[in-house]
Amino acid sequence: MRFFVSAVFGLFFRKQAKNEITPMRKSIFTNTVFYWTIISILSALFLWNLVLVVGYSQFLGLLPIAIQGTILALVVKKHEYARSGIKIWAILFLIVSSSLKLVGGLFGYVAGSVTGNLESYSLSAVSILVGIAIVYYTNKTVRIDIITDEPEASYT
Image (cartoon, rainbow, N blue to C red):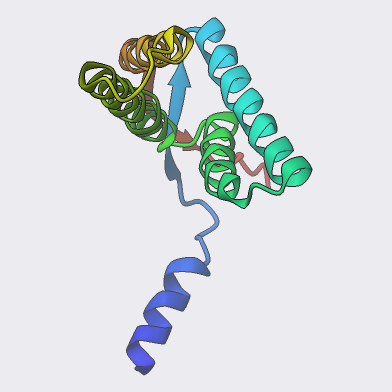
């Protein structure tokens, strides 16, 4: 137990040597339009879910708030996991969930139990296309680079 505590403590509170170079991995967004588009989309969805939770007491919106807030923080900080977070979010919550909603609606329409709602189908299709575009542009314009924080030279 003592080893575990000292190992965990050492991981999080390790002191660096004075002249040690610390390499960091950062997400580099090569397209600023895409960067601000992602921030705008995530912020709009975050605010929409916040309004639903606060204004209409739909507490199921807390999960999307946590997910979108985390991804938004990763993107703004340009963290190394921002690229993976954007891709996972777009694939799961835009492409897969909208595809399941679209397929379920079409199955209901074929079975005759649900009247066709063109607006719902078109919204799902647009969400799928936006998700595909986000994944495509994330693969093309976001890269991970190693950045080193070099210590300042001492003139003593």
